[in-house]
Length: 333
Image (cartoon, rainbow, N blue to C red; front, top):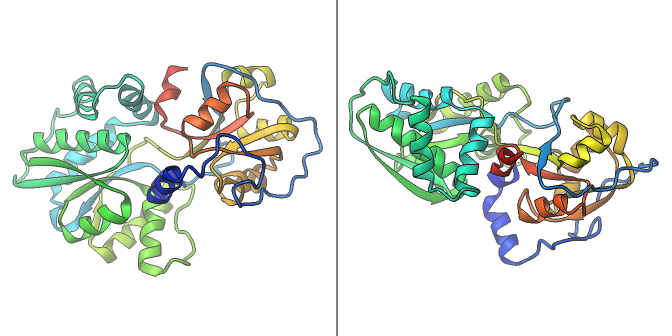
């Protein structure tokens, strides 16, 4: 489950307090790394200018596919169909390219969305709905704002009068969506399913998301019924935890998958970089240990897929680091 989606406010507070150090030993954040059984030599970091994501071949991560979350009262067939056109047009490489346009090329989310919509023929064939005012909420990071602009383009073509409002984190916009203060939000299937599960069934409820998209969206639909939300079609675009190395590292050690990493690079020289809580998180270091048997010789406390982690990878300070699968910098490889 992606860190930014689950606890964006908490991570923002950590950053504001400068708790995330540029480099730290295992356990320096107050968490303890899993006990290391790394007996091999390992693979030291290799400096490089571009990053590649290692394939999650054993499905450690859950299905955080982008999909529209809709206030049930507003979920008219024409509105849902227009939003589904956006889902049909997106996959992860296209989402990476959109993020590159904003985060690397410095275009505004609206300009990036307009260019994508024109190139993809997004509005072709969209049927007119009953019209009326629709407010789209956006979380406080650029990818979500770009997705909100794509939803706006599709709904405007369907005859609605649309405004886009940046609201903040999920704890703020989800209640507004339930109340109908906003009608649509771009969301992420697995993270939202577990968020609603905690809200409906208690914070200690067992997670309902999984690596199986059908299972995740089925659980999400059931939870949505209980809080007055409906959902459009999930896109093929995913934004979730991923593990990256430099292109030069992957070539030197002949790696393409996380299984390759575990088999060839478990050992003392291998360092894993990620956010302070990574050692104990089931979708971060703890999951690499249990799912892949990967043993790093050292954990380096950095940030959640941000500049610290990417710089540490490119300078060879760490061997492998937690990134996000739709990061715009991955488009430059």
